View 1 (cartoon, rainbow, N blue to C red):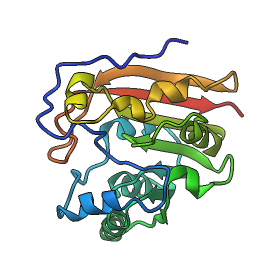
View 2: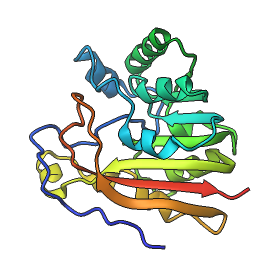
View 3: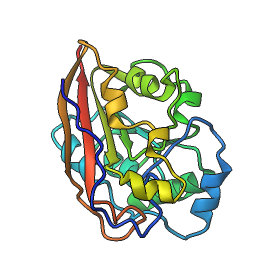
Length: 227
């Protein structure tokens, strides 16, 4: 199986080059994310991520997990299309906004203040596990990658999307993309119990506004766990 590389690209990185989009960490109380969300009335665009909309459109609704749900746009979008959604994030501020977003949209979402690994979710609990631009720290034990895989039910779908980073510019801002889990790290753990349906670099569908709008290309991994 061939995985897309993460090459440096000609991106406009006049913004913060750290992982942009919905995020989660390994811990359940990362105050730095509360500070970031608290510094602005709204951080993200309020619209669902384009890769999620594209990749999930043909799936039958079931139980969904939104990893690093941020301000809740993806979770609300999924719930509005009939999914039974659990959404987690390490930021209480983000979750408060996400809950308000869902109420305004007239949908119900189960909110969880936790990091992915700390949540210790039951194995095989979700028909869709979506991680859109997550900030999952790499560990020697590959805890985050394994937690993503374990959460997917037999016959379910795993969707991991991340930006193609310009490593040189990132290092100038004291950020190393290699410190965080990328789709290729997850793909490397897929065995013959999985079918890789999408594994590619593609132009990003950019929402108007929001903190990730300057990124150009995404790495998209979609895999299905065999029944």
